[in-house]
Length: 484
Picture 1 (cartoon, rainbow, N blue to C red):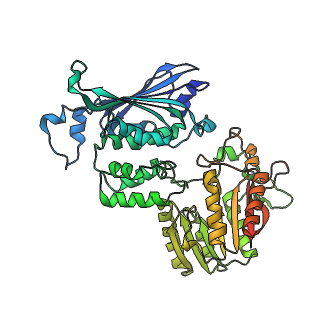
Picture 2: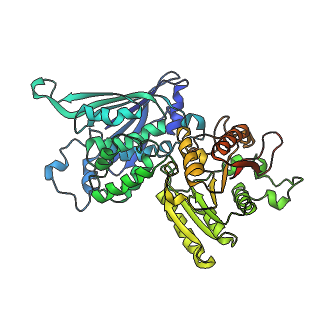
Picture 3: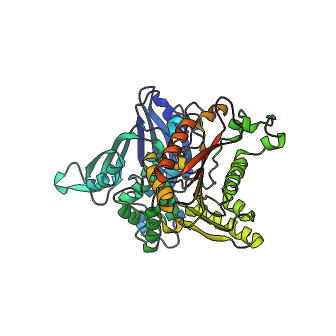
């Protein structure tokens, strides 16, 4: 099986940084189905091509097949699997290009989040439904699609075409998006998988489809094929996609999202220092920024005398636990789009409830771009490090839902201050603090947004710096406290 990825961007060999594979080497990776090789048949500053070649071992396939797999005798050895792209190739991609699929690249972080010119070629791809099916699934994602049928036999044209196509995708797309789209759509076009489809396949689909699948016009057909038409799994996946609003599903990484730069980057920031400031003690400056942010949010809620609070975008429930441990707050709820994060939040809240008493009204799955009656009836709503994860075109929907539909008496919003990023040593110019951030506002941009939203919905807003307020670039976090 062969997959090639070509780019013609300036300094085209930076593709090696994005894929985490050096262009001057041949890389070899053992797989359960054979051996994957990554090499660069073409690599200069104007054009660079990376090739993934999966050398499938039929004997390995037989030895690793599940107990329920039918025994096809000779069919185990005489088949198209060594030559035609399928779920075997998708699995190899997930193993070999795992970091690239997460969108991470320490050497070129800004490039990892930038659409680049790409040409992707799969010489032999099983395509159930013909070439039009490839256009149907890849076209809405911004690709120019060429799917040329492979004849059954070039010497006998009357025999017609095979079920395979030579697929070429051309477009300007983020590499991480391209890889995740291939990971999902290769087995979808083949309409088959080489392994048993279990419940964890729903999580794989939602993670790899983050940012594109929910808005795809054929998401239902893609979901059914990817999950082998298993009705229970399909219903679960479609339900989660219906609520998806672009918030992070932790990409392909099971580790919880950390909103702050790494310790190495923070070492150059005032937040990573214990130097005393005129306003704060040495003990206070040593407190992590995440803790100082939570303290600031709680202080703002107390100042506004808001006791019934909903955490919109609660993640794994850290703020919920803080609210629950503070007897000032009488009713607490949380919501997030991520099922995985909500699992952590519910476990954390249940543990604290046993110690602190039940003041939790609900912890539920929801998307901030859709009006939801469960968001209403609270004195305050908190969006702590949430808005920067929303695609800018969808931010207006969040504004209408939170400030217009839910309309609590108080809304507290925190978000990074982009100007402060220069204080993080090692963070590339223009780069953001986390790969899932869709934007990061300067102080003037945040103030303009907050003032506009407040005026449109009948709120007043005050701005509060969180963390050391650097005289040149401001505090690392900015907070807006809206009150009706």
